[in-house]
Each structure stands twice: as structure tokens, then as C-alpha cells.
Amino acid sequence: SAEKEPLSQALEKAINLGFCESDPRMDLQGTDVARKVTTLAREMGMEIELADVAVESLVPDDIRAEIEAVEGSREEVRSAVVALMKTVDDQWAARVAAAKEEGKVLRHVAVVDVAAGKARIEIQAVGSENPLFRLKAQENLCEFHSARYDPDPLIMKAPSASPAITASGIFSDLIRLGRTLIML
Image 1 (cartoon, helix red, strand yellow):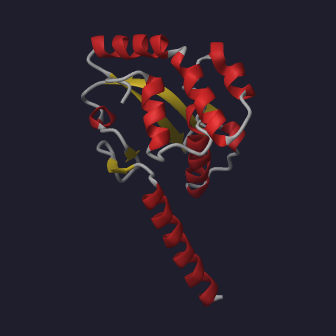
Image 2 (cartoon, rainbow, N blue to C red):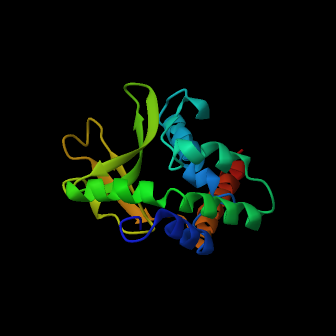
Image 3 (tube, rainbow, N blue to C red):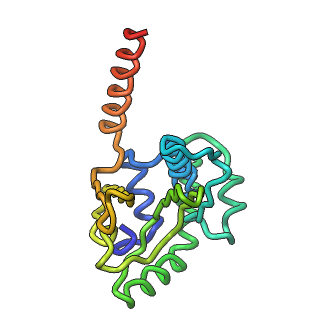
């Protein structure tokens, strides 16, 4: 996690463990999360497009153009992206330290606000009162606020995607699709 090691090192580890998209820029720039948020928002009845999701990227502005310009094989892209992210490790370390001084940790947070018709992804410093504070590496958390779950939200925590979890989800989707087709 970023609290214990430089972001570039955590990125490299995530790539090697298969936790990143084949192109890690999709994760760093928030594209992968934005796609999931768009799907979730649509399932919640919102009319929203990917471009409507406001995204705070993990890639600082000073290297964004360089990151986007990287070309080559999958391994060349991954290596170049990690190398570029190493150049901003100090910036990330400063953000982590500032949050830590306040007793907080940084989290990449996606928010779908159905009432406002908006979705966003941002980096937040969260304190110990926030369920996101206690997340461990390779965990995701969803918090649902609704008329039923007010003032205490419904909270679901689970492992983040890995090749096995992704395969299980796809298999589940295929079974559901098969059942739907049989009913037709």
C-alpha cells in the first residue's frame, strides 16, 4: 500500500500479481473504475456516459502527457509507466505524509449520487471514523446510502479483483445469461 511503500513500487507489485489491467494506465487514470461506476450508475437508473464521470487521476498533471504517449508491447508499456510513476513518488509520499499527520489515509473513492445525477472518482484523505480507513491491500468496499439505510449505510467489503475472482464473476454472468436465454 502507498502508506508503506512508494506508489511506483506498489504499482509494480500489483502488475506482477495480476491486479492491474493489462495496461496499468487504465487503473492509474481511473478509466477502469469509471467504467464500473458508469455501469453501476446505469443499473441504479441513471442516464450517464463514461465521459460524464469526473475522475481524479493518480497520474499527476506534470507527467500525464508522457504517460499517455507511451507505446510498445504490453511489457514495454508497463515498464515505462512504472518508470514514469517513480518520478512522482515524492509527490505521492508528501500527500501520504500530509494525510498521516491528520491521522488519515488516502483512498481512491468512487461516488455515485443518484439524487444529483452525478458520479465521480476522487482521492480522499479519510479518518478512522470512515470504513475506508480500515481497508487492507487488495480489498474493495461499497457503501450504500438510501432511505432504508439511513443514517447507517449498508457496507459490503470483499477482495478486489484477481484473475480467479474475475473468472468467477464472468462464469456467474454466463450462467445467468444461459438461464435468461433458456427462458426466452
